[in-house]
Image (cartoon, rainbow, N blue to C red; front, top):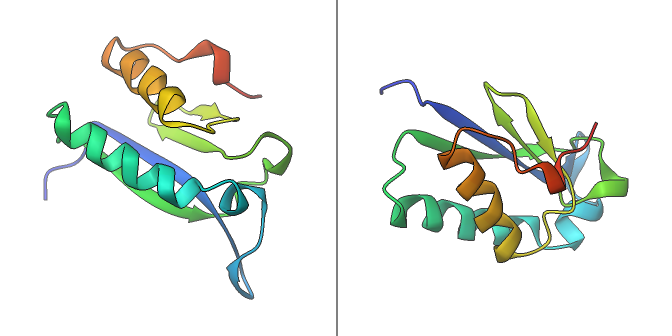
Length: 102
């Protein structure tokens, strides 16, 4: 496997004791993850890997995601439109400033 240029982690709100319990899951982060993967494929961005994570501890700003190696943390990723804006910015090599947290 070739090392990805970017790795996007989407909060799945999973806790150590089991299933998803937090804000991100309740706000459909896993549905948005599926859209994110499809949109990346449609744009030919095969050098980006997407993974779900346990709780990212950003419940007050969920759904949340982070992009590495840039270390861009995003909150309020609540729609496909927001995903599109984040991917557009990633293609341009910059953060989508409207959704950056921290």
